[in-house]
Image (cartoon, rainbow, N blue to C red):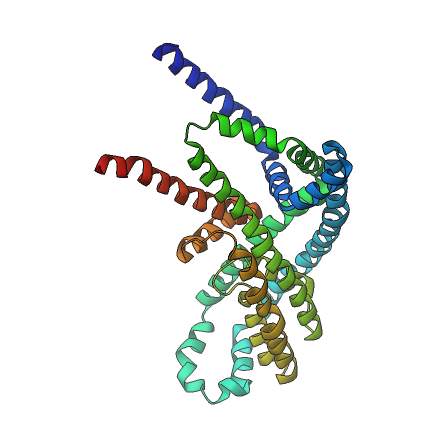
Length: 354
């Protein structure tokens, strides 16, 4: 093949590839979730495949199990959470619009902890009573509620109202489980790298997804369940919403779930009393945050090691840019980039230096 023919072939290939990816773009979320779930349930698939000696039946059984144990419960939780979030949003906005800042400041001054520090806090308390602060507060609350609401609405659409998206997710899961090895082999064959470099890239991608699924996601689920129990025991309203926020916060280093339960605990101490505050303080310390110190290290030590600051920005950036699936995509892109840079350093830089 001449250079001109090869160049035309590459242009045609890339044009068709991007066209195909553009066609798949409306289904990108369920397809990506199907791929992520296929990695998570690989051990279960191999278990049925070994005993049934039939890849299609084994894949179908796993898909049914995922639908019954994951899709249906999450759909119900998402619907209930969406309803509670609407009520919570209306309540927050109404509270800010109907309550005077002066009354809130007066309430703060009556709190025993702040009573003796009124003079020290007077500049801050005076600022809280200005119209500018109220407008700023409303703007921040609206942006936060809009961001959370949009992501929750999109997720509810995918797992509940978007029946076709559920079908796409389960269909992707089925074929990735059954034919994933064939597809992976074709991708490996088309990758113009040495075998050891291919192994390094694919192994890193696999370990990254596993680490996020079993380490981070597993920890987040455990912390959100413990959070729901603790919030309910402490008498916090909308406990389900706060437990879901705890789940998402668990993905955000360095404090994870503490981003949610610690401010809630401060709120309890300030408004409900010492008893409720101590209930959540003890529960959050012993059960919610402890999960992060037990579950995550057991998995992450077997997985990938990423620079902390890079992991932080890749997780937050992925969440903002791609939604919840970005929690997986961010670290995956980062870890793959690091491996590619290592390969470049080994194959190109070192060769030029010798």
